[in-house]
Amino acid sequence: MAKGACFVQRPVSAEYVRENHIAPIAAAVWRSESDGIMSKTAVFRGSNTALVTPFSDGAVDFDKLRALVDWQIESGTHGLVPVGTTGESPTLSHEEHRAVVETVIEQAKGRVPVIAGAGSNNTREAVDLARHAEKAGADGVLVVTPYYNKPNQEGLYQHFKAVSEAISIPIVIYNIPPRSVVDLSIDTLVRLAELENIVGVKDATGNVGRISLQRAALGPDFIQLSGDDIIALASVAVGAHGVISVVSNVAPRLSADLQNAALAGDFAGALAIQDRLTQLQAAIFLEAGVTGAKYGLSLLGRSSEEVRLPLVPSTEATKKAIRAALVHAGVLSA
Image 1 (cartoon, rainbow, N blue to C red):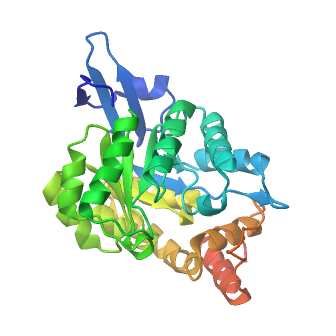
Image 2 (cartoon, rainbow, N blue to C red):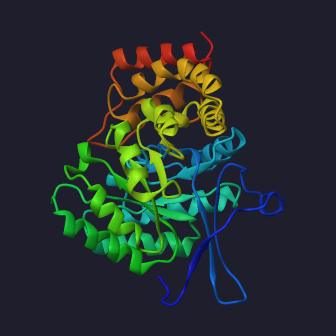
């Protein structure tokens, strides 16, 4: 973060949205002004797809990736999140990771915000990935809590502080205790929110009450994005601003429509869409979410189901459940 910069949150006008081709529900703009004050509009809202990374014969299929970006945006998705866990970042090389980020940003063409995955349990590596994302033109970065090495709360604070000091674009913290085996406490999140470019959290604790507690501690403007598709609607009802979604890989229009309705206060309409999606939200996660999403995409003719070891394609029982759920949702013909 550049020293001496002051950040002020202000609304984005309809004219600004139109001129810059920003999805009306989502904008991520950081811009300098002539008075030397940095104006901050960092609004990540709605349905943000945790993009899969398509493969073909072991290599990243960049043509399919570009096509997925266009399809997502044309279907109403509000933001894109490449190279997270669903993007199989653990098994991408650093060169592939960077190339995927660059490709998604280039193909999105500023139509929706791109929040690039930049997580690692090695702070230096996380800093390096975040710096690359900023240089590539990402609107923000998603940085997961360090996994496996189990830092304490001070270690977590120092990890995110180091990333914050290395870049000037917005940072969304990814708190996922079931996978990282550490839980970023609300007290630590409050400390981190004092850093100028830490703007939100992807909450994958699985606890809707956590959204309420964080809202009480941090206020309504601190961005909270659900990390669990099946409780995303409930999370918005108690103050979340949207979701980083795996299911939206295969049902982008429905996922966006659900968020549009919920964020507009039309919870009856949102619940009607939720009823169509619940089976799919459950089926996708019967095994690894990415294998479920890739199988669904293969049924839609948009990607192969190829994944990298140690992941393998979904079992036949799971495939049957996903197919049935896609039909129930109206995404796939019977």
